[in-house]
Length: 274
Image (cartoon, rainbow, N blue to C red):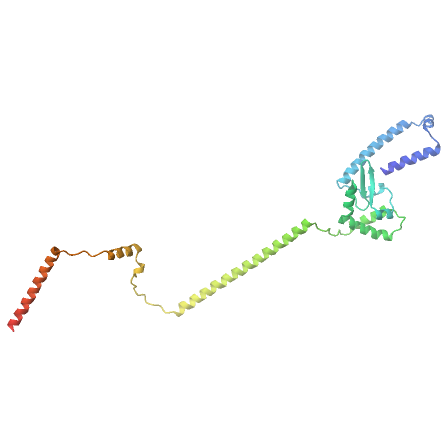
């Protein structure tokens, strides 16, 4: 884009130096209309390519050599003051000298980008290289060196976000919890095995030392009798005993009297014989 503008400006300067105007061009047979149409066609094609390039830059596709050659000349001093430069006026798009492929659409995005960790890291490296370079050097030469060094060296790890730090802390806590749980489980298993072994040892020693006793029949205590039977016996003992009537007593009394008379008669006979 900038090459095309520079070429058009040079052509107009040459025409002004030669004193060529529209009439002179027509007399000399220079078809300005055709040239303008061809220029317009080429410009539209180049604009389409420029739009495609802009889209490719937004998508992250960036050709370092070609894009650096087409960038406007900037001094080291200007870059140190403000590395953001103008890419296009319609639409208004800015870029960053140090951050390849970065598209900045407004001032707020520029402030956010300048405060990012990656931009600050590149700016510090550029500042270090610029201190050893001449002030007349092209800034894009230093940018090429900076990008070459960045590709050769290992990228330093970016600062982790709060979410990543929180995730790492959670994973570490979970790992520690699992480790502690395994240790407690192993201790419990060992303790249980030791307790079981000690119980077996005590039982074996008691069995070996105590003599065997002869089993004796044990009467069943009243406490082991069924509850229903005990309750029935209690109820029967609480009932009053039935009275014996005279009729029931008579046979018993007569029988007792007979036995008494027999005894008395036998005793009298024995005494007489003596």
